[in-house]
Length: 139
Image (cartoon, rainbow, N blue to C red; front, side, top):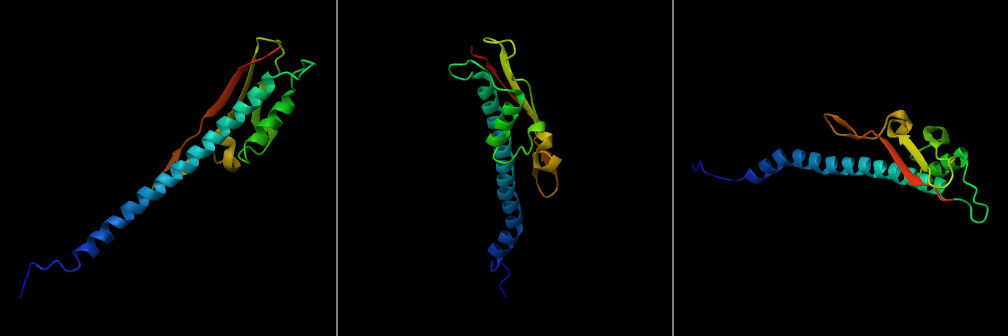
C-alpha cells in the first residue's frame, strides 16, 4: 500500500481557498460600488456649484438656492433624493462677482439614510463624508 498518494489534493486546496478568493472578489466589487456612489455625490455637488457660479448670459442674474439644489439632485443619478438634503446656502453669489458659490452634501443621507458603505461579510466600512465644491462667481 502506497502512503504518498496525492489523489484529491487539488480538490482540497480548491475547497480551502475558494471562500477566501470569493470574499476578496466581492470585497473589491463592494468597495467599487461604494466608491462610485461617493464619486457620484462629488460630481453632483461640483455641478451644482458650477451652475451657481455662472450667471445667466446677458442679464448677469445668478441662480436661486432652490435652482442650485435641484440641479444637484438632477445630476446625482438618483443618489440624492431631495433638494432639501443639499446645503446650497452659500451658492447664491450674493456678493456678486468674485464671491464664492459653495455647495455641500452630507453623504450620510444617501441610500435612505444609511449612508455610503462597503458591506462585507464580517464588517461594514463606512465611507461617509461631507462633500463640497466651491467656484468663484462670475459677474
